[in-house]
Length: 507
Ligand code: C2O
Ligand code: CU
Image 1 (tube, rainbow, N blue to C red):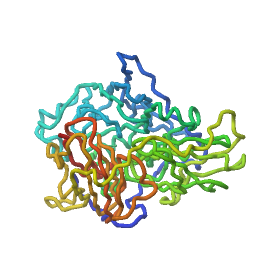
Image 2: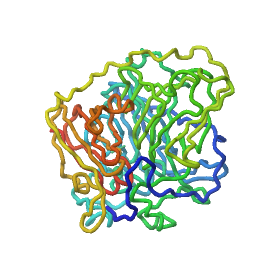
Image 3: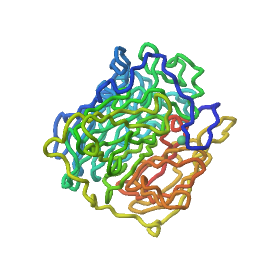
Image 4: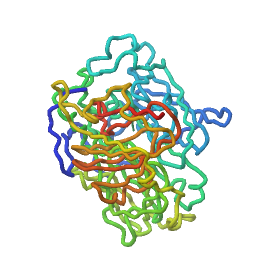
């Protein structure tokens, strides 16, 4: 936990202090959009595919002409994209070649607690001191030595992928340090496919593209700028004030490239939009909008495909949320330049990327999105066997201002809820600020916002929901899969590191 300075303010505008880059920044839309490579399995064992990935530092050209040190899975930012099949186990062996501990969480994945990437379940680099043998783990952590579990050098995470086709992602989840470690690059996409999805005429192959959107700031030499709480990791302790509301940079990256451009043909594309930012929210529109039809036809949410497509002119995307959308560039003449714009940004954070429509539709383009997508069971309030309320709020704790859940900073070992396996509960979230609330393991459906119907963009199975300032959000959560200790937390990563987390235990 940490004390802070900036006062959080209500309202829909983006709050928080902007870190300004001192590096020379490129003009927008000069860099082509990179697409992270799809990871190849090292072998198949029984019915399972086995992957290996190494966490290491690397120097990557993010800003043209400069090298940036990143901490990446396989030395890349974003990491490789893992592609799994529903119902087929995927084992991910993570080797830590960094100088610090890590914990890898498959966000949106349904896996046993020991493979869930809990913040206290560390993979230590060789030679790193064992936190179970120290008295306290640095001045920022309140974790008792007995709470840690530790692997040396590597860990094999087992993902059964017993869940439908979905757009997931993986990222670092180390206790107290997720925000700086993700900022340095420890994040990537993870896609699951299934037969139901394969039977739908959705754009595929080179027209199915992940868009991992996140903001960063850069020092003059190209290194990533971050107001770390660790004085050995920051050049400017003064910017630590940016910490309280969450850290935001002045450069928008898509798949690791600043304000990139993608050449498209005049036909339908599927984009897996992920907000991988530490704290920044986006409201995305197309500029200009299409001559006919909606800008975005949403086919999937965090947890998988929707029952039917939903049309949106704007996508509000809070940290960790995913929108699986189809965009029809057939609605634009060849030669059009179409910007993806963030209406919550200003200056450089208003631009996200640009599409350049360079040619007529190719052969075999996808037809109109069908009116029925997946078989999705809508939960009803009457199914809930319990109701619980969780308040996400800034509080004074022992003379320090802290981000808390129900008045308490994170206490590993203290479960705030004990839902029963294979039941549905109604959880109510309240808050004093924008808090993107995320549950591990359990997916949910939004039942109400402020006592009214949810927004059109709340549809489907979700694992993250933005709770707006002084708003009440009701969700129906289905606890399925496994028993044991899981967690829920604010996915503003600085809030998360400042203890806005809690455990629940499925019994
Ligand atoms: Cu994406 Cu607990 O996190
Ligand atoms: Cu928060």
